[in-house]
Image (cartoon, rainbow, N blue to C red; front, side, top):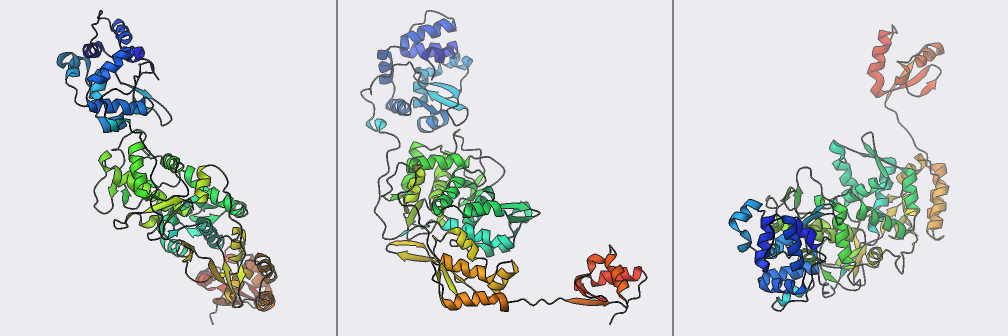
Length: 580
């Protein structure tokens, strides 16, 4: 930090005279540097600082204590919101009006007595203006008369709340749904429309197959999948990268969940603020999404993982202790955000609860819940409905996984893999902790069966195991992709720990012999009088692409979509065409 002499030397002479008048110092020189040096020597006494603090109002004393407790520096915007802004007054006006004699607020009282100064600096959030106390200014103990509430530490720990009767835990459902999504796009890539957005009809179909099918969560899942390279845009479609997908599927459950968590925590592709329920973002402007997450996670890391806390208390603590957690410059007018219900623009610090408060609720009820880092009370909804006015008091707690991530360590009991369960009716039950690579392989020859849901274990709701069914059509799809029935049966036996009903295993293996496909082609048959004519047609660069499978040396199939064009080319080429 800067010294008292350096700080005073940057003031104009009129300001130095004002400080000297209020501090009872008679300047002996009209030269600025000499006046600054004399004033620095006089103000450098502890008794002088104590006297100055005693002379200001209780509000100014509280502001002084707050600045001291903040480490002797605070962003000018944050200090100004609580204690008043310091007016910009030039040397001429200072000389004429002697504004130091009529301070308008607590901040100006401290400013005109030389107890605080301003400078631009970068302490990790980028260059911005700070108010500070010079490093060599004597700091007396708390002065008599200072309000008691001013000495209360900022950002006191949260008080736990009553444990809810029922809770909800998403477990590793985001990783499971990522596997489901990747499986679906393996054979049928997702078409992209305007601005690279997924085809809405197909996106809805995919979303409805997930354990938690919310639209915002689906968008986050797609974004994380692309950020990790599992999906990539190619000629207007999202296609699967088999190598990167396979590498992730082969990780342990803990590693898979941790990769999703770190991708969200550190990534810039997903912007939580622009997806917060109740807010509408307009125009192009920049906000540092990872910065906001890190500041919240730093607060959550201080919580007891065994206790429950109210979301409203988190927002209240952040507003007191770190209000600029997502706006380090303290500027609350640069982003164009509207309230979805009223349509009014949310600008200025007075709308902190409507913007920052909403975001904090969403971060906990949405991404952190989806990732498995927090559990929620069992009566409400997740982040998709985080803006409901009648949702009541919402509470949460850290999960063992969340506490481990925040402490950068492994959990004491990492998730253990589970096995498939195969029934006589060809139904397969897949627990959430089934290895994802096994889940991915199962999807090649089994179809989803039943709607996603929740199950109650003791007092905790968790996503239910998924159900699948092996059918003739699913086996036909597997055979078309090159998977043999014998291989599918061997996989089932291994993934189920050898517990596969005999009729299921034999039926799958038997499908290799009996499950051939029949293909019907709509079109016409082109016949010629001699084999040489057909050979010439198949060698013609215009005609050959329009011909289908060869039936004999004198006959070939013509797909229906090519028929009219082929007839036109044959007639232009002087062939006699007879239609039967």
